[in-house]
Each structure stands twice: as structure tokens, then as C-alpha cells.
Length: 503
Length: 122
Image 1 (cartoon, helix red, strand yellow):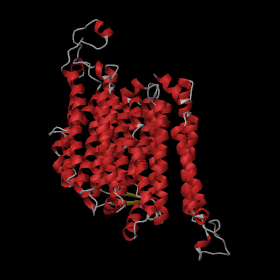
Image 2 (cartoon, chains in turn red, yellow):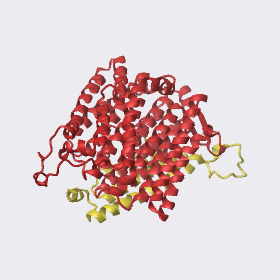
Image 3 (cartoon, helix red, strand yellow):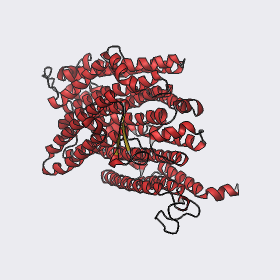
Image 4 (tube, chains in turn red, green):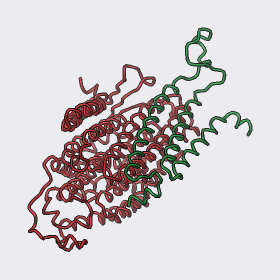
């Protein structure tokens, strides 16, 4: 029965294909691409089977090598983890399919390490999602992070510098996390999360536990680019290749947010985190400040990828805000926003990659309405994702903001409500700017004199991105719409079973 | 106060090491010094785990026939040591990756000094 074994097959599919991609890549480079696709398709299959089994029969606990937890390492698949795995492997599959032309174009002759590192990254992330053991979590975190640094470094000329910055801050985050785990291990004597939860329930909260929780939040905050700790993100996303960004942006920071959910609401008692040490308040307000600050920064950016990177910081802020609410509505909002943002941001970054392939740049001042004509489908996908980012009703983005706003109103937290409203307006400012240029701004009136003098051809023929790039983009854009329309069903059937007891 | 220092001196030194490392990572301009600081942060974290496993008067975690298995207080806690073996591996790999990146940066810009690096990146 595959369902019960699913937890171990998902990371295994990724990690095995990572190593196979490296080996087969020696024989022929396209084989690495095929391996990556097969690997992520297999992982998606196992994730879906796992989620089905979890929704039907309840959580699955897989004991690695047969050692019983709390001594052995446990892989734990509950609805939350199952859904994250499906999301993760689904997005990976789409981005990998997309990679064929984009990776060749942007980082020629580096395809083999690229696909191998990408698979290692997702393997680490999927392990992080499922593991029930704090130290194992650290190991998977570092597997994912180390391959992430490599993946960021395969980019343009400045990529190694931004990868270096990412590495120092990411390592610092991991060190804080490990220190926090040490404090918790010293005071509880166990590393299994379910076991820690049992110990914490009966023991009085002590200073080491508080310190440990705080350190873990700081460490994970660095990884998820929570507001004052986001300095590595814009550079890393801008200089990495489009495919790498489209892979890291939607799921990398989200998995860190998932760890935060796990640690704050599942491992510790939510009541304790909320009232005794006010950790969720800290996370929520940092998120709120981050939303506003990153939106302002996004408005000032001229490069599309950089703008999207700042917007990612803002979106992480929304998730942190939902976690900060520490209520069922906030939880639904945060999880829903993780899903929605994964779709929207992946779609937007894929579009920026298509722009780079077909237009040779992704600089906002250089866009004009020719783009809407040259790349009609890509532009349409961009528009849908942008509208969803702003949060207009039929799209997915509206509903997560709706739940976050409901949660804030429920707790009469008017600061959060104001932040949500103002930031939606700011999102509108920076996305309508691009939409306007794509569809309305006439050609020729270019900001750069040289280009205006270029021989004006008649409006260029439809020069759409190749199918392997277009299809994933369109699937993601359609996904944004479907998620929006189906959200009521999704929340009652999938997200509500995730809500931990005691929240 | 003296008792506190005597009882916890290992932790105090480790906190100091962690802070020095953090300072190096954040303030120093040379990328190599940043790597050194990063390594210090990692090492102090690893040492923190190891110190936590220490017990006064205990011995190595190998079954000793004179002690037997009845008195676990006479053995160190082996778990942190084994865990930190993994953490050391991770730290070494991180060092390797950071050196590789530093080499890539040096080849591209002929400098590892951050201000002049930023200057040349423009």
C-alpha cells in the first residue's frame, strides 16, 4: 500500500533523482532535465496518494528504519503536511517542465548541476515538511538551504555575491535554530515534536523553553525572510536564474513559514505561545511592518524580478500576520495565502522568465504594449496573477486576504485591518503600473532614445514563448482562478482538518 | 556571582564566542573574515550541545564492566555527541560552499573586500 509508505517516498523520489540527474547528466545533458521531471512527477504521485490516505484514515506516522519514536526518527504526514507536499511537488513539476528553454538560455552549460541542485532543494524542503524530529528538521533544513545557495549562485554575474550573502544569513538562521533546539532538548530531554508537545503540556513553562522558542522563531524568521531579517532575499531572487527563482520563491520561504506554524501551534501549546511569551504577537507585528515596508520598496523598483522579490517579502508578511493572529481564521488565512502565493508568485516569476527569453530583458520602464501583442498568453497569465496579488474577488488572492481581515476584525486588531487595506492599494499601484504598460502604453515613446530610432517594424508577429514554458505558466494562472472559485470547498475539506486542537 | 561564573563558565565563553562570530559576520568587510565569523557561530552552537551533555564525574559512553548499566549517571549523554557529528558535517559543507562562492567572487571581481566589491559591481 503506497499510502502508508508515502512519507518516505516523497523525499526519496527527489533525492534519488537529484543524484541520478548528476550521473545521467554526464552521459547527456537533456537526460538531467528528464530525470528532474520524472522525479518530481513521482513525488507528486506519492504526495497525492499520501494526502488521499491521510484524509481518509487520519495521520500517517512512518518510523525510519523501524526505530520507534521518540528515539527513532519519525516522518509524520497529517493533512497540513500532506497538503504542503502536494503543493510543493506540484509547483516543482511545473517549474521543472518550464526550465527546459529558460535554463538553457540564461545559464548555458550549467543545466546538469542546476537540475540536480533543484531536486536536492525540494528534497530537503519536503523532508522539512514531514519530519517529526527537531534535529532531523535541522538536517533537512540545511540540505535544502545548501542546495539553495548553489542554485542562487547559478545565475548572472552578480549571483555569487548575492548567494554569499544568502549563505551567511541562512547559516546564521540555522545556527539560531540549532541553538533553540538545544535549549528545548536540554529542558525536555527529547527531540520528537509530538513528545515535546506532551512534555510541555504538563511542565511549567521555564526560561530555557521560552528562550528556545524565541531562538527558533528568529532562526526560522531568517529563513523565511520575515521583515527585519529579509536582507538576503531581494538580491538572491534578482540575480538567480528565472527558473531557480520561480522554484525558491513560491516554496522556499513558505516551508519556513510552515515550520513556524508547526513549532508555534503544534509543538508548543498555542495558548502558551500567545499569552505567556507573546511570540505570535511579535511575529504578527513584524509581518505587518514588513508588508508595508516591502510594498513601498516594490513600488520604487524598476526591474520586474526585483519588484517581485520585494513583493515576496510583503507576502511573507501576510503569512506572518495570519500566524500572529493565532486564531482559526488567522490559521486558515495563513495557510490559504501560502497556497495562493505559491501559485501567483510562481506564475509571475515564470512570466518574467519568458520576458527575459523573448524580449531579452524584464525591466519595467522598457515594457510597452507591444508585449501584450507579442506574448498574448503570457501577458494574460501575468494579468490574472497580478489581479490575484492585488486581491480582486474572483481570484485566489482575495480570499486569503478576506480570511486574514476577518481574523483581524474578530480580534478587533484594527492595525492589521488597516495594514491589509493599505497594502492591497499598494499592490495595485505596483502591478497596475506594469499592466498599463503592457496593454495601454503605445510603442515608440520609449524612455531610451536609442530604441526609438530602431527601425520600426510593423507590430511584430505573435512570438509567444515555447510550449514548455507557456503551458506551466497558463496552468498556474488557471490554478489561481480555480483556487479562487473553489476556495469554499477547499477550506472546509482540506484546510479545516488541519487546524490544530487548542487554537 | 563567583559561583555562577564557576558553574557556568563554559556557557559564558561560548556566548562570548557566538557574539564575536556574529560581530565578525555583520561588521567585518572582508568576505574571508565573514566566513571565519560564520564558522565561529557554528562551532559555538555545536560546543553548546556538547557542553550540555557533560556530567561531573561521568565517563565515556562505552559500556564499562565495573559500572554496568545500572547507573546511567556515570556515563555522558551520548545523544548530543552523535547529533553534533552530523552538525559538524553540515558545518564543513557550509564552509566548502562558502569558499567556493568566495573563489567565484574573486575570479569575477578580483577582490574580497566588500566596499570595493560593491564598487566594482556597479
